[in-house]
Image (cartoon, rainbow, N blue to C red; front, side):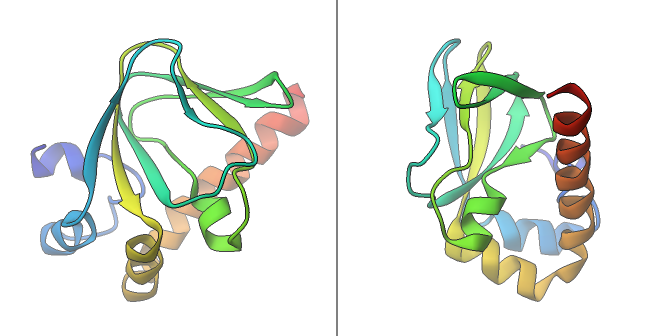
Length: 134
């Protein structure tokens, strides 16, 4: 994936090209088909997911509570708090993600604390969506 596209991902946008490459050097690509479950609520968390292409629905207790698309990410809460997944995420269409291991994500946050601002903004936006539409 080219750096210009990576720079458009809000979580990675505050980083310079070198730092983005450093954060993603161990990332792996994953593809999911429409209807495929990406993560299941309660499952152990091992990676952060960055959506590159496609859309996914977010479900809690079998109820849809949100939708995500390119540039968005999920899985950070379970990694930070070291608990099971807080929601089930299902691919709505062809979904391509970059997967960053939990240890790499935590190390990246420590080394690049500027990543925390877009992450907090996304978490707050999700909470507002749930409060106002839930």
